[in-house]
Image (cartoon, rainbow, N blue to C red; front, top):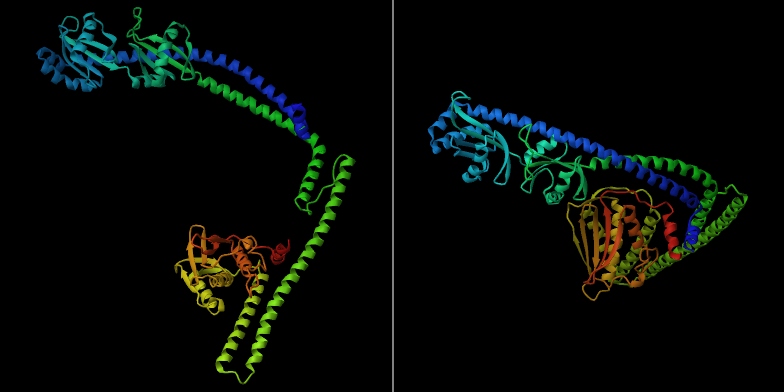
Length: 607
């Protein structure tokens, strides 16, 4: 049931592609599995060969180093000065005189024994080896006549070379003592051997490991060393989630060495399977790439076959969605391999054209209604002002009027003329919205001061305290005339709102800037914008009950800000101040509206 529902939801093209994907996926996984087995076996064989080569490399390096140690010890023991020191039989003298020989040898351990196998002087890099431990550890080997051996002193493994100090002929001369030179087999040596052998190298002694392997893996390796010792060609082990091929050999100081003891120091060499795994991953990538190539070719073939069926359906779906979204201009292509599909497309295209014609008629009727509303509002305002001018002019013709009465009537005439000028100026600027701006770099302080001075002549600005807060350094790339008009309109609204406040009317202008915008914030202590008008206050002819308002002030200010690439934001503060903020971007982007922006915005009133 579930599979049936799933198939019903799939598109036709998907239904054709799914079986193709399943076949190629199965073939790819099978190929990767077979190749992984082959590469795994080949990798193990190569690692076994690499381990043997690594062991041989270390043995050659170790024998070369051992020969160097013996030659160095022989050269130092043959020095007359050191022979003279040994004949003094004074330990203090020998210790003081032997320092320069130790320093010139560049060895980690340097000891002098007298002919009775008593320690006369000893030096080592960290100075932590007590004389008693050196005496107990080295004397038995000297007594047995060993000229080289490995020994653990102070928890450190040393490779040691011994050279007798003889006065006179080396075979028949008098034995003065023994010179012991040792080099520590530490992490530094392990890294040198690791670079030559291209593997992880460790030295194992007294249940302790020193080498290139991470210290946190040492305990895990110690538990698996018995299995590694018993393996002939290497043993596969896992350390820290990674697979290694490991082998071990006892450390010998001579080419022919007796059977080592179980606790003898040993060399441990680890080769990671990572290189082989990298080869497997590389092969897998190639197989995957080839599979994808074949899949792409097959998909192209399937798509080319299915396109003739699915393409007309997709085109019809897009056309229907466009009509559902109200886009009746989106064309519906009449195509398809089947006549039924072409007929269906033609039917939808006819329906689209009918809806498009109906929409045009509706928009035209709405525009006519809007223009009528605008003409009615303007004619009403103009008749109101003309009636005031006519009446006051008639009163002024009365010769019995006093001078004060005539001046009062003249002031009313001036106010009416001023209101008519504002109305015509707003309509003129509003009708020009969308045209090119006459932009220049302007200092905003003088521009705002001009708007304030112009506003002070308006009756709405009487008794209103207007404060300007700005810096003379703030500049903007603007059309001074249009931006000044936008600020004037916002200031006029602010003054009219502040006059309704029970507190002394106050209006402030604050100019600021940041990295992106220059802002002009106009705040008043009026009663604010009614909640019912906040969503429509930027539309034309929307007014909050003003006696002489045209409802174009905010609309014009918003259009001017938009022409400059900015916007206007409305806020109401906690202390009951209303703020309109103009945002002007510092980097101008041409976002002007089309030439018929006036008609489109007017249409929003009725729509």
